[in-house]
Each structure stands twice: as C-alpha cells, then as structure tokens.
Length: 325
Image (cartoon, rainbow, N blue to C red; front, side, top):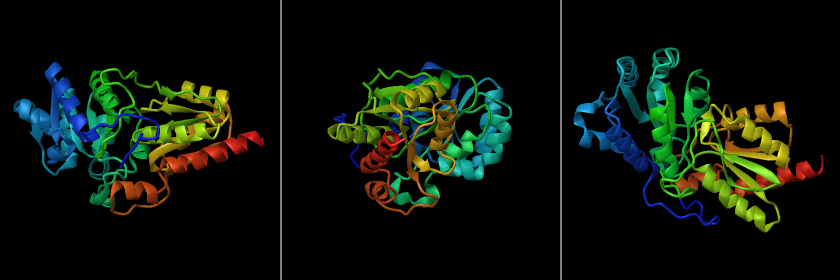
C-alpha cells in the first residue's frame, strides 16, 4: 500500500509498529522508571525492544489482558511509568473494565499501547482489527488519546505520552507510513493539531494513516483549483477545538477522514465543535457500520472507501454545498 505518492512524501521502509519499538526503547533508556508490560505479543507490537535491552523492566503477563492492565495500574501507583502493550482489540474487548476502573477512574499514570489499530493489519482479519478504539477510549474521562501519523510523529508521541502525567492511549499500526515530518523535527504538543498543508477552500481533518491519504487528496484537488487545508489531528482527546473552529470559519467546509467506524468516531466529535462554533457543510470519510473482511491492506482501503479518491469525492461535495448555501 503506497501512501503519500501524489503528495511527494518520502517513503519509510519500517512499519509504524517497528517505529513504536524504537521510540519505546528510547524513553526506557532515558527514564529508568519506564517499565513495559506485554500480553505475549511483544514480537508483534515491537515492545520486545525493551526486553532485549532491559529484561528486568519487561514483564510478559501472557494472554491475560485484565491482569495486564491491573498490574500496570499497580506499578503506576508504586511510582513507575508502565507501558501496557497489546492489540487494541484485545485490550478493549477483554480488559475495558480494568482500563475504566483501575486506570481512568483512578487517573493513574499508565500508558497503553493499542497496537494494530484500524483495518490495515489486513489478513489477520476482523477479530484483530481495532476499529472501535476512538469511541471506547474517547468515552473515558481523564484519558489522553494519541494517533501518530508518521515515524517522526510516533517518536514524538511516545515521548510526550511518557512525560505526560495521567492515563494515555496511543494507537499504532502494522503498516509503513510515509514521512510527513522530518525525523526528529515533528512539532508535537498534546491537544494541538498540526497544519500540514495550507488552503482556503476547505479543510480536511485527518489522523493516523489518513493524514498521508488526505495530503494525496489535497494534491488532486489542487489540480482542480480547490486548495485544501489539511490538519493532522494527532491528539483525539483532548481535541484542538480552536483549530477546528478556525478551520471551519476560515475555509467554510470540512471533511474528516479516519480509519475507524464513523459511528462514535472522531468525525462526530469534530462535527459537534463545528456546529457550536461555525456551522459549515461537512462530509465524513471512514468505515460504515460493519465489520471488515480479511484481505491485503490496499484491497481493504479500496473496498471500504478509505482512499484519496474517496476524500476527493467528499471534498467536492462539501465545496459544492458551500457554494450553494
């Protein structure tokens, strides 16, 4: 699956999950209070980088997600900075009660990696696709939720999550993402979106893999005389309401793009902000109300309408609606 080609982004040959492993090792090296808890998936999440370097600070709890979260919360209470790592689908299906009670309600300083988010894990299939995480984690007061969009953003997000005091959920992906930002030069502040492309005709707000896809769409739209602003909404909670309101007011149309169910997704939260600040025409690109097939990632994004062409179509509709108001 090739993203960012139209926008001229530089490809990156490592999957985002590998970048997470590198970033996790970096924060563990810098901070001896960082410990890692694994749900017997360290080779998939790439949390095993810490096991190799600091085996005394790596704990494989096994296929027992509820215990994984509970032990992590206990370690946080003892003054450590635990990174609780597993697949998003397993954590939220098997340990949501513990995430809610032991981490969110206690407002403990635990960090949770939800790996293999979205549908682009591909042939592992729908049982392992984390497509409900924005809704489920977004419903937990006290949580910060981060969705990195490229390798540099992942490094910055892991560092910011580790330094932040309080619960953090971070989504990771199995696929490789192109470089939107120069390595070691990603502006990253929790709760502040990044403008990665300027434009005055509409705004495309995206997160995760959909940011590169949005930039491809914006390149196509520019060829049609439509200049799209693109926001990288790397923080879904707390969301950058000021950037959303400004984008709606200044460009007059908004398209959201997410690798998540539209029901309960981040587009719905953006719509609430737009409705309260500057109501404008909106369109939403995301997953319909269904579970997806097992297939190659490129085939899945095509079948379930998560391509640049889908964003272009939504953008044309939003701009047309804007012009006819």
